[in-house]
Length: 197
Image: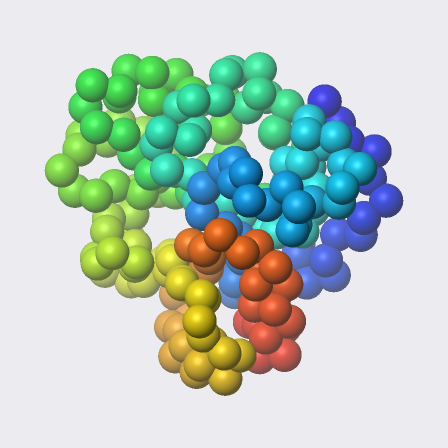
């Protein structure tokens, strides 16, 4: 279902995810605690993803989240998100892999990468596969940092700026792993001031 939008696409977003700009997003979906804090009160539940996709550039989905979505829900999400939006999908364990392959096809070209913890077989032709380096960093086959999962809880803007200054240019996506999505706006502002998003 397409959401009637009166929101502006951020000027820093383009159709090209390889333009050197950092994609910003959150980890996981849905988060019940976002209801009162992030989404407008009068926003229908079926429009929530469209709202988020207009505010962010990516979404990191744990395997249990994206495998729980029906093919119809995934199709609606893809209709509701801009062409530059990317999904980063944590790969499931071996028992779920057949269903994962079918669901993966629905995402099409909007998959930024499959995130593999190294102990699971990955069958994803034509999709980048990034391996976990530590709990919060995913690297490509050359060992370059590509996705960083950042905890913002209890950290001030100066601390976050220091981390952003230290990110290598190879990082494509930065996702927040916190229950407070409002930090996404703060992070976007910092990245824009630093010229990286």
